[in-house]
Image (cartoon, helix red, strand yellow):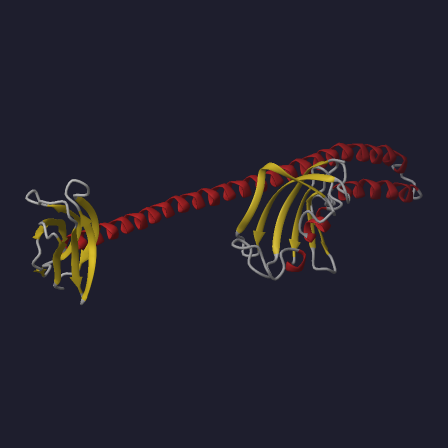
Length: 322
């Protein structure tokens, strides 16, 4: 709201009804003479000069003053006393409140934007969890398929060997068929050989029963599938795919779509990996149960791995380099 006063030699007292912003002072159109006209203000018991105006030289001055609501102020022109117009505007409480409300609305909108952003974070978390579940299912499926293939090959080998051994037994049997009593001892070894053949074929192989090794340092190594390719040894670059879990089953890391490469035994990974991957052969799959002192220890790896956590990794050796 606009505000203005005309000030002359006589002091003009003014009590602002609102906070008042004074923005300028200008010689009135009726001003005469070339002497200085000094605009002074008396405020809170002190007198201050605001500007000095001279007709034809300096007729206007910009000001930037705010006087409090209800606190009396007095203006006066010294010098030649020509009239000066002082102008500005009221700063109403309503305007101030509106500004505060606008600021609050802006802050609320920023806060809401932050909350909306958290929905995106939740979507990303859900997508990561879905990917981890898919990766875990793929790994289990690969392990099951490979185990089934090896079992099928073993069964096929056993089935091929069994008729041969039975044929040998049948060839030996006619020697023992004469009615004479001494022939019975001759037949007995042949029958034992024929009976022993299927029992030997039914014996579980190492691949069918995962081998578990518990080391003195607490590391547990379980070969799910024994590979047949090059062996991982200290100093060689190895490429693996893996899933990492806590003992409660929560997946904290995985790399099944692409391999993870590192130099074995050189401290590029946690100690449990340097020890647990050693000795694997390409094509093999191994489960490593790693105690905390061979993993991330008392510090953990925030936010996914808590302190003193035992870690379980399913590792597949894909490649061994130099």
